[in-house]
Image 1 (cartoon, rainbow, N blue to C red):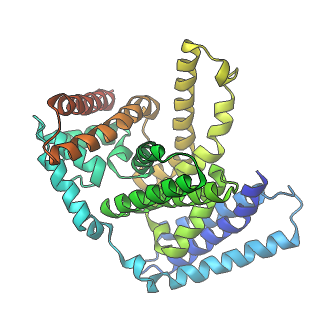
Image 2 (image 1 turned 90 degrees about the horizontal axis):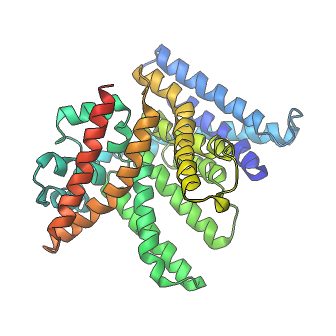
Image 3 (image 1 turned 135 degrees about the vertical axis):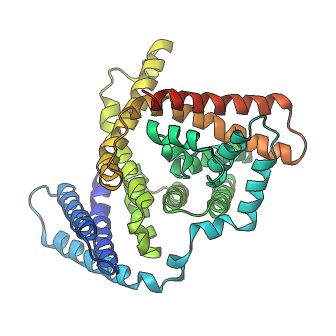
Length: 368
């Protein structure tokens, strides 16, 4: 926890400085901008004090570092509009040749229902314009819109697939370096092809920082990686702080990093001692705990921006997330094999069945 506290002493004031400068530089001054600016600063200050290693006794060095980080964040925020990367539109990157090719491959899969192609295209490339309105409404009303919006969930699955496929390299020092390099290269390519939205860039930074820490044998807890990536992303693209996707992504990860471990530990016993039934109930508890942790941190933002709160979020996530974890690798395999004319019919029918199961379940939940 000490490492997280030390990083928090810099990263949170830095983020607050970027937010203040960025929102203050907006062309329209309304109550939402004032609320966002003041709230982000207050939250950063409160978290910095709460995570101070000396407890209530705030040292002069801690105060000086926090103040300098705030000023540095403000400077980055003011200079952000001069950075070319801040002017990049994610939609332009989706039009990149690889992104366009992926969309064409998704459209070409011979599913019996064309809405399945649209969902595959949304899950793998972020392009959602072809999804029927009733399916979009089912995702929205059930609280599963984040599944259609490319995020860390999607890149995390791609990362897991890549780590598995590169495991044949072995575990020697050279093999681990090759695996990390290949993993980062594939995830970077996918991020660019998918549009490099704020939330998926956050996931890419997680992967890069995590792999770098793994190679150098450095501390890389979820909390430390979270706050390190926050500084890196805001330093590169300060305007990202205004993105709702950016705010929701980091809020969700904050819940996973700081609330989920505590909730997870409330289940009695040790995982290695569990029998088959106990493993199942522990998995349900862990999944529910993660959903609750994310909603605790993202709920206020969702209510502020959308005036809504998904009442059945736990049921939705317990059903949708495992299915999505199966659908993405299955859809990716079907898309690649179909483009080569090698995909067997049972894989196509299996993927279509999984997607139909997902949409039907969300339709039922949205009608509750």
